[in-house]
Length: 153
Picture 1 (cartoon, rainbow, N blue to C red):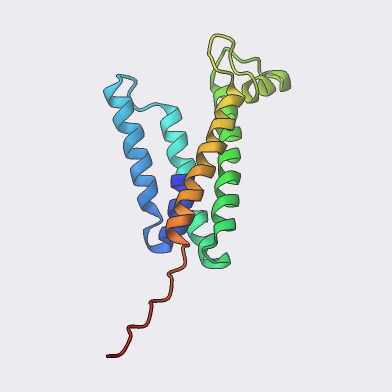
Picture 2 (cartoon, rainbow, N blue to C red):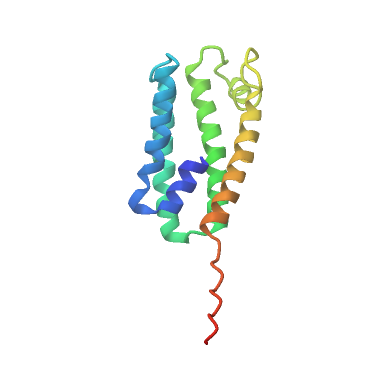
């Protein structure tokens, strides 16, 4: 989500689609080269990326491009994607019980045959997104030092 939300926020309304193109392109490439093809999860992700990037580009116009907007928006989008993607998995996977307990399992531990547990992906995403935001913030929001005056001769 850092690339999607942060990229669209920093690129602005004119180029909000560029992070989506990169993310969906890489998802398609991985799916096709690993033999999994283009599945429903890829299509769901592409739709979520598009909504997040569009909202981020508009949010940047409304609130300004600030580091808190970059970081908070990215983390909020990450949590939203986590909940949405795991809910999608719960809905389509017959291995999850179609109950509140099954939904909760999809959000926390995931299916027992997979390791690590689902919540670890959220933790890692939030850490990685924060690192991306710090680096992007340092590069994008740095203040240029005023030039030293050249002494007259």
